[in-house]
Image 1 (cartoon, rainbow, N blue to C red):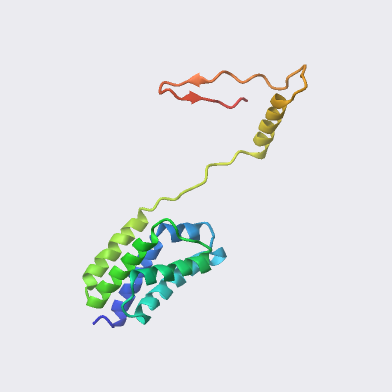
Image 2: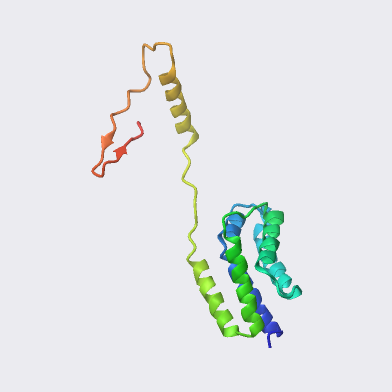
Length: 176
């Protein structure tokens, strides 16, 4: 029963769910660590990992960790040292064990749980950058303030004093 094509596809979906919800792989793909074909490499990685399980009997967790770490290093130039590799390896071993035992309903439930976590993923974005004009103006101000020669005229008025807000924070506003 466990050898049928449909159940093998279910295991592949499980591997996909584990790897695609893994933050390290998500970050690597999102930031282009795998190059322009990062998403294709992530999809390829699913096939390679599931084939690795089928080709090797009685895998140990450390073997799975080493294999995935090597793939991440070679394909995404990423060294995984955040402590998540043992968790990912354990999840994959657990899915494979469920598949081997023929517990396909339990396997499907695990996949559904992981897929729900993926849909709840939030996107991390960088803060907006200042325009070049503003940063040049700030640099000029700094150079004028740090100047050791006395200046007769000032091009910019002195900044207003900081204001204390209700919650105790000091707000520093940009001058216009």
